[in-house]
Amino acid sequence: MRALVVVGLLAVVALVIVVVAVVRDTQGKGGAAAGCPEGAPLADVALHENKDVKINVYNATDEPGLAKKVADDFRNRKFQVKKEGNAKQQLDGVAVLQYGPKGVGSAHLLRAYFLNNAEPKFDIKRKDDTVDVVLGNNFAQLATTTEVNQSLGDLGAPVAPAGTCPMPVDK
Image 1 (cartoon, rainbow, N blue to C red):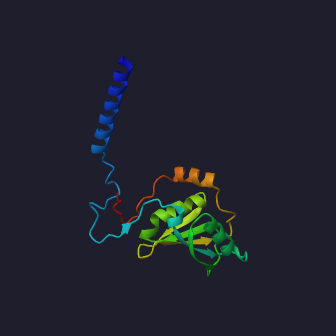
Image 2 (tube, rainbow, N blue to C red):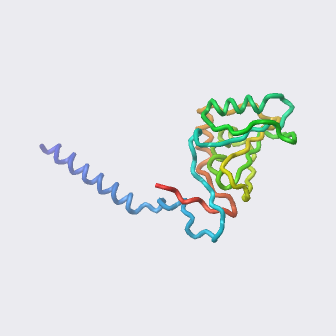
Image 3 (tube, rainbow, N blue to C red):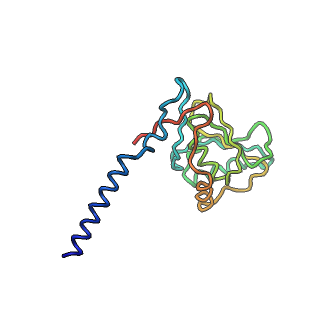
């Protein structure tokens, strides 16, 4: 009987602690655009699931068919591949990720697939939520699921680029 009272008391204490933590939570509006300059573009800093990320894949190498091969690899990982083709210029690096305010969280996720070796190129004027993935001469392969998860941990949370404000988070 005494053990039952102790367990009940512990449950009540735990419930009180949870309620106090939720009520005092100051992170609930961490992504909100409060205090942002009027007219500043809102950056979508949410980390999306693969199935919600739209990409275009472009080959900036000498290797024929690389865009199709990598686009298929992204499709197999449940990304929405909108376009694939050749870039106008060669690229010496691993990759470049081109995106606008609506693609910040998606580009952050994609950086993990390149183990943070892809160069981010943010365009504040871009209006869509698609990320252009431009593959360079130093590209070898996309990271494995385990490597992506580790890389995401190293990268931390997406951050609104300069000149933008974080989009309010829907709850």
